[in-house]
Length: 236
Image 1 (tube, rainbow, N blue to C red):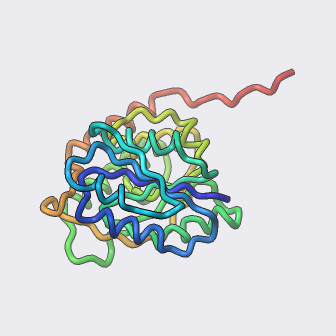
Image 2 (tube, rainbow, N blue to C red; image 1 turned 90 degrees about the vertical axis):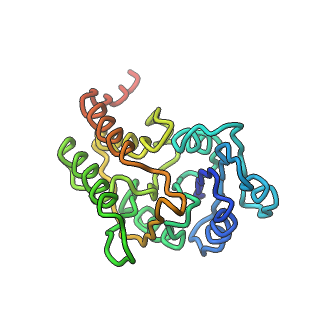
Image 3 (cartoon, helix red, strand yellow; image 1 turned 90 degrees about the horizontal axis):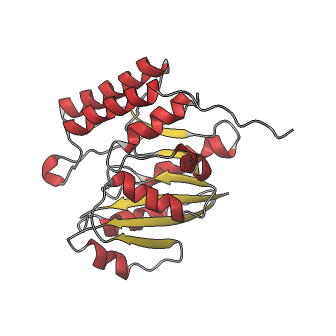
């Protein structure tokens, strides 16, 4: 199996070199490629990516910022692996956890795997940030009669073709809710594994806001009211 690690990047010149180094240093249990989409960065991100040299790395550039969902759409269209996982470049997630997400797939226990941030050991999270995450996740659980622990997690691992079939339209952070809503609408329940997480603050460049949480709940409601896709009929 080949895993495509998809990394959307926007104005991360202080972190992108470390993000690439960490992602490529992991001892993965399968072949990987790292597809980075520079989503219209205006700082030195592009220059740093231009100097990166690794046969497993491919860089795609957007001429202007289009949003995380749009960057992932570009990366998925270019992905050559059978499976994919999203890894942000902000160093909040540890790529050393990716083999743990792969384990249930490789041993046949799961097809879709989410990394679950427990918001346990930490230095200090924003109260409203944690409550916002929990609120959006609870909305999904109520609407779809499911029990997932972390809808907004970046670590969503699934077959590339499955993601492509979802037809994700959200161009920004709303893609997280849209992906989960569409999976749950198809009655696909993600398998969850605990992961480590280090949240950065607004002063460090945190981009998601409360408006994204409101949008996520609206997207979940939209997906819940849409009819579930019917399975394709076998030819007679």
